[in-house]
Image 1 (cartoon, helix red, strand yellow):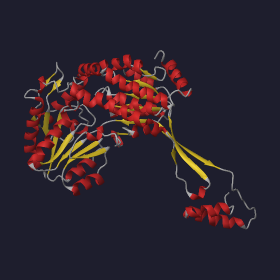
Image 2 (cartoon, rainbow, N blue to C red):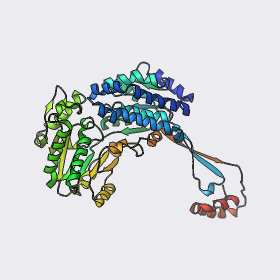
Image 3 (cartoon, rainbow, N blue to C red):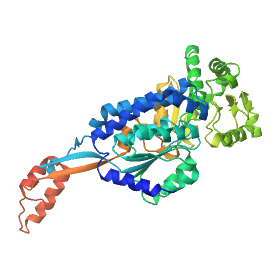
Image 4 (cartoon, rainbow, N blue to C red):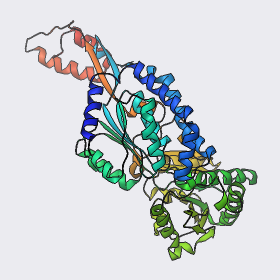
Length: 480
């Protein structure tokens, strides 16, 4: 890419100058980010509507509000986060002191996603700024309006010598990944995540991969009818209320006891109509499918004859508007693509079980999901879910809230990704924790007579076993 090497050279020179390390620079950039979202709120809404059809309420909840909240938290905490903290030392090291000092990695690459093209691009940027890095920001080309908007406006609010926005498609991504970075943060699919990780390995670059996976919801039938109405609303909101299911944290499939499935489908269908009307095609609260490729992929999943036969609600499509109705499927084949690949769309398979406890083996026999949502009042069942499954997060009796909570780490495990961010965890993700140990030159007594050697060995063994005799060890001059 023409000019890429010069851009990176400028960023490296800026970082080497120490410009991005000061608390004043970090705070000024965070204030700039806050001003950016406040002054451009309506334009962001318009860009999101054009790219993915998001209603302003959804756009503020999932995009603008997330960025503003994250920037304000970082602004209030960055000075505390970047301060060295005292390290604990065993007594055997006396006299000595220790610190752990967070330092920025250097020049980092952030690759955003198309489904949340503002928040999942700018939230990692806030973290990288807070940690004192220089940044190249690569918005997703699949959200072209948002990408152009960021490229045009970010330099007006943030330091253009330290933060660069680079647009482009697959060819640009390939050229960016060929460069040597000090850290790469990627949000997207598992397929592209493997490409990013392979490229990073060439330079031993640390990576954070925020991927996806098949995040299940478990529906225990022990709830009373009042709770069931609430649960249905939370399931519908988590599946179709966030970019029409085109979200890594959306419910991918639902596990329920067979005897309860019919009532649950009726309740979900009623709730869908309550949220989106009799004809969701006309609803302004329901996002479109992002592009023709993703529409075709979802249509192929749905048109598998055995999958199509399992449709229990919905199923209508409009290729011209790239619309797929909220669709519920009952027991599609477990070896079909819809049950082996992440759906990333408005299709919800329901899998029935004889006993809800079987859901634990069902989930643990598959790749580790980004999230597990379990609706249950059974404390024993909760403990088994926590102890016998592995996932990026577990949320009981609600959905999606774990993503919005800055005091909890957000990230995957296994194929759903690795690394974590949000709040202080974001700062840590873009920082290296450098250990600092300081010692003096006294005391330094060392007898040189051979008979002492056996005593040295015994005292060293004791020192490792009992740290409190370290002082005696040093005073006797047994340190080598």
